[in-house]
Length: 387
Image (tube, rainbow, N blue to C red):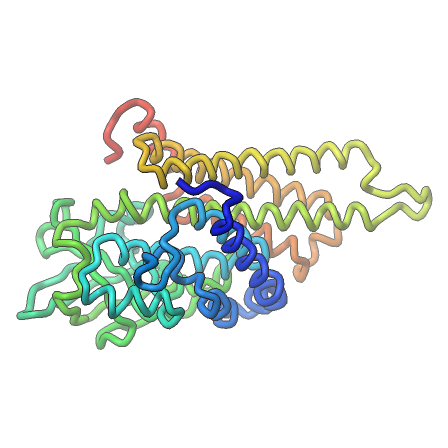
């Protein structure tokens, strides 16, 4: 198993850091202000091959796993939470496509992804099932060599901008039979795919997390992922671990950005009446130390969980649940502290810290939510089935 510090990881991390500094950071404010999907920001990792992070090398990708995902998304999230989120969801969906591909799927989807010509994403959540994103109500019916899909998906990150969507569906009447849940890949130009209103979020305003109506959408039988009934396997073996790590990386990046901004401002400011620099005030230094420690501790847990996942350890799910729980609580705490230390300046609506604080709030509510993960973690530790 590869370790942090090897040339492959260092190269990927440096590439992501360059993109973050040169492309994402200069555009982050406008992406947030205008609620724009980050087209320029998503083009940059595609141009340097990062969109093929999880595609096998034989198809032109990097063949990497969870740890590489954590490193790359932290760098991107540090500069722009929305772009980090969009990239992370592409990575999760690309790993789903890469898990059990047919030769045809490799050529139509995986090779273009590795070449930077294709963005994909997940379309699993539905308005009627809440945080239970693994319980689809969207139905599919066989129609010759095709399936017809009907239903509604919600909170589709990259919605309306991706080239394909990984969709979960179930046979009519089998909505309570997990063994019948199936994943398919749906092309963006499929007739009957009707996007709802543009995304206007409190935070993560550029991720285009939209709802979509599926009205008799025709999908080729060749687009079934794995075999019919594989959806639960995909959710817990691929979607959950990769989603949790991708989100953990993004939120680590947001927390890191808040800490770095806070440190810079405390060093730069001083009281005019005493000449004392804010960085020399003990109570402020104490809070900065707590921020740094929280980020460092959480990063270690995230990387530990990613290592376990890449190694195929049976302890990986427990560690991954705990890592995402911890990162959500940490990023909210760190950005709240950063806002307090920033004073009135940070409270302005155009301040970077305001964006970071708003983006951090999504950490608890994106499914699987923190409440759901705590339930899964507890059941896992107690030796109970998750569902």
